[in-house]
Length: 437
Image (tube, rainbow, N blue to C red):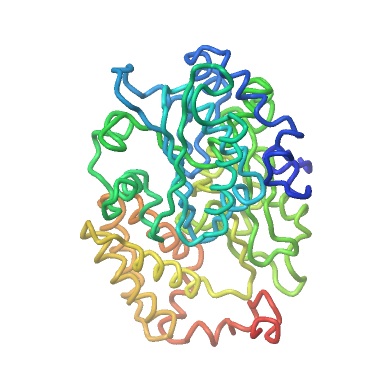
């Protein structure tokens, strides 16, 4: 497999690719017209038949999630789009919203119609002000063209869309913490059940989906379920963004069928940045997924293939690290992040990440003991499966997998600093004079 499947990224290189004029020229909002003439139950079944799975990391079947909503009781129900992309290494939703936001807006309209929602929300990561402004403009254009608002395209369907900027908390990427934040409260995970499908935003039935999941809906409606299932693998159908970053020649977004391998993606990305250092380790789905190594180059990048290799597909954020990088230092930086971003609601995550941070810093500076390695694993055992939400679980993934594959480097941390074993200047992505500017 050496071909890409540009669907959501098909016209990113066009002039003003983000504009309504460009989107309509490429056939935009034709799917909405089709959807508005289709029974709602048939739309939900279409998405189920396509096999579309959540593109935010969990991989839960999207159509099934829509089908979990209880019968209409006459009260409001909501669609909330999770655009709080904050996972280290993950950068797919933000480029999509910058380059072609109307995919998302049309997907919101179709999804809202299918589930009986008349007010949808897009919760955007607060730091990306440029994306927030672009989405606001895209929503304005959709209102002006009659794709949002009252009596959309004469169908009798009404829909308002609110774009909400978060306050920069990683925990708000967790769907129930996002809902609390959207309601004006501190973003902390809720106890489940009840699940959002039953009591979500304002205690009403709510669907929470990732940006890429919703943006994929128009093409499924326009082209059919068979078209979507013709790509990808049997249980992981369709296409998705694979975000290559780090020590690759051409980092960027590669929209490809699920099941593509890292070897194939690296070939398309020009290989590693230099011949001096080979591939050492990589993340298949951001820093909260167990790392993989060069021996996993041919693992199919779908939910089943990556799972069988001992990791998770996650957000398909492929961070590529070559042999110049200290695994201990990389994992220490990730745990620093999780310790900082823990909301503090539960003891395992709050205390566990704090203590893992201290242990990793000792090992990074060559001041650890061999007991520290077992202490790290013990801390992971007390966090994994005992935290209130997945943040704690995710923080343990890079630690346990790094010790599994590179235990010798952790042992070396008992006597030699990481920057002696792996001088940081060797792993710079840019020459020192460029990095200093």
